[in-house]
Image (cartoon, rainbow, N blue to C red; front, side):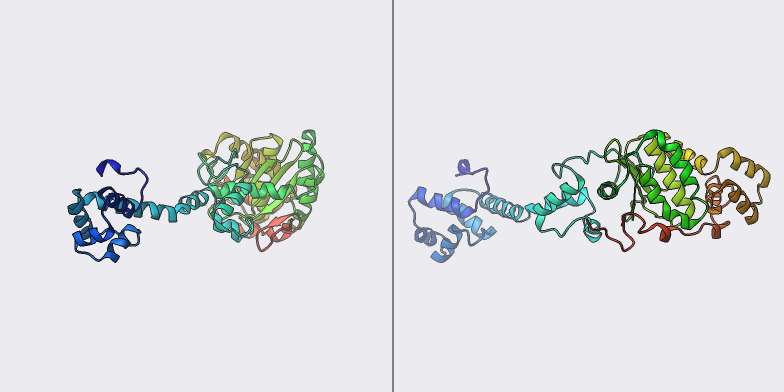
Length: 369
């Protein structure tokens, strides 16, 4: 009997039936040998009763085997049955590793899910991957406060959503040689918060699709840039910090990614320490600052007024440069000329000015496709 053990786990009752047949015994015979009822033997054979340590010893004595044999058969069968019942757990775990499912359903990025197979299919479709085990294929030259070594599932999901939204925004064909004119026109809107309402249309006229997409928990995303095709760039802003300096710096930073046709970029913590950033992000940061306020002009202002940056002087300098004073404050903070508490009242809110001026997802808004 030791030699007839199958590699496929089956209930010990099947082995018991085989052994009875080989010996020419009936169930009544075995019941008589063991001193058990026929009903007990029948339930063992039918798999309705599990082999216990007591019955394992009884069967071992009756058939000249070991008690361990019968217990191993029972344990193997129970493990196989449990694995069959819980086979979806591993599949579900893979899906939850791939994306923040609860957040995506809550935000309406995924429709209601019906079972693990439906979940796999919908997540794969959303992430644009053939199977749940496949890599996202998304190359993200990210500027973020999380690791640059790898992108989190939530960051990739945010980027895919930005890609979806970008396809719903109408815009002209983008032309590389029009970038200087785009920046020049944008700069005219940087002096007053309410002028930010005009930014989406201006960008669309120059071929850049702007979407507003609230970040997912723990992604720490400020913005991102991607290409739908060679003439269709998309800039996504998370508006994570509701300040005019962050809005303009993030926007200009992403536009530089567009100008340079960098790899798709998800950017976070825009005002962080440049020494911790990849070179492409340091470059975009520096140029974004320079587009808004020429570096030599800000250097001169710092030399003349350091360490006392009075509000009236900051306002006068901002007016002379054609930008809002909050943008000057943001750059002074970034250069550590002032601490994060100084001149904060100049860092006016801007989110309410731009939400709804282009396709918006978040802050209580859910776009309809």
